[in-house]
Length: 104
Image (cartoon, rainbow, N blue to C red; front, side, top):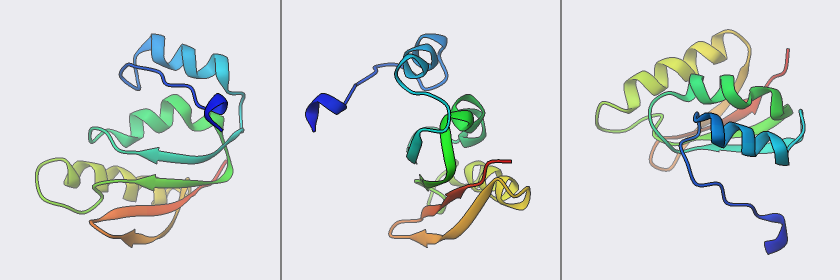
C-alpha cells in the first residue's frame, strides 16, 4: 500500500539519511535489501546490516558489467560471501547478484 512507502531523499550513507531510516525501521525488520548505487556496497551494509533480518533477500545491481563500477563492487560482494555474511544464489539479467544476508 502507498501508505507503507516512505521516500527519503539523500545519499544512503549521509547521517540525515541513516537517521531517517532508523526512525522508521527497527533492527532485523528488513526482508529485502536492493542495492543500486555506487560501488561501495560494503559501506551501505555497514550502515544498514543490523536492520536486515536473518536470511534477508539481497539484490545487488552491477555485479557484472562494463565500467569501473563492477570490479570493486564484485570484490566487496565476494569478500562478504567468503566471510559468510552473504549467501550467493547467482547472478541474473544484466549481472544482478541475488542472495541472502546471514546475521552472525
